Length: 100
Length: 314
Image (cartoon, rainbow over the protein chains, first blue to last red):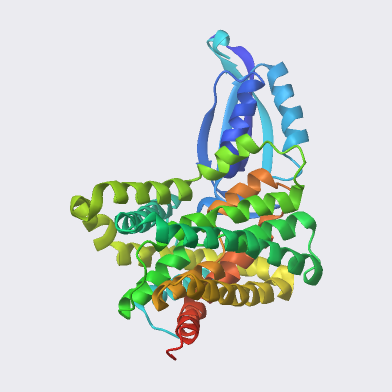
């Protein structure tokens, strides 16, 4: 199997900023994204997803390294200080590199 | 204290949450229940709206909007000076307390209905109007007027939020369709209202219980403010209700609306517009203190206040 290397960017954050964040990611070069509901606990307490104020989302984007770096810089400077947010990167292989 | 079944559901949720029970309603269920409540309240108001003339409504609408601007302006200095809170936190909490809680309103409506106290059925219109002014004031208190706030984007996010769209949508559908045409859908929205409200309060009990930990961390000020400010606001709402000619039931509801603190529209708006405000503080006060206080103690008290203002005793 000939897989091309790409970055999988995973962001877990507050559902309240979903639309704003997705606009930013698309502007920064994401060709697509996947959003799922999530819940958990971190330094900002339990995010139980029991009601809208405590719901979390997990956003996944597969992209090239430059785009991933741009996203990292943007999120760090615009969101990290005030929002419950984590972001991490994994190396993944894709079969259709032109899509990402 | 009243022993209405819906209040008992709230106490059950509260107790289950405090005892760390496994009980947990999925977020989707909560969403569904709140959608039904918001639409039902909107529809009920809309049906009645068709029978009112703008001439009687307009002065009441203006007065209520002014109250929506006034309450956060009063709350803010109290939070800043007595609570020594940061500017953003004080502004955000002030916005929560200037706006309204639809859940509290629904309980007050059920409370009045079970005692056969009538009220102006177009109250949901005033409820919608009270949602918004405090959000604007809160943002201005936190940011100042001239700051580089993107009002267009913010307006879109604030005024097209779930609660305002559903309440206004319900009002318009009710107004356009009229009572007879609404009968086929009435089973869901009106027939099941009390059952839906009971389940909703069960979940709200769980949510309120989950705030207790942060209440312990953030001290007595939030506890005192979360009870004292609603009492003050209820008097403002009650006096205004009397002035604009509402009945005892209507005055009770306006006092309740003034006393209630938002936990749907305002938290979402503040997260976007004033991100540096700590949401834990405002939600602890609003959900952990004021909501339970209003449900358990406040509403009967505000009805007594309304009766007192109208001069007919208790």
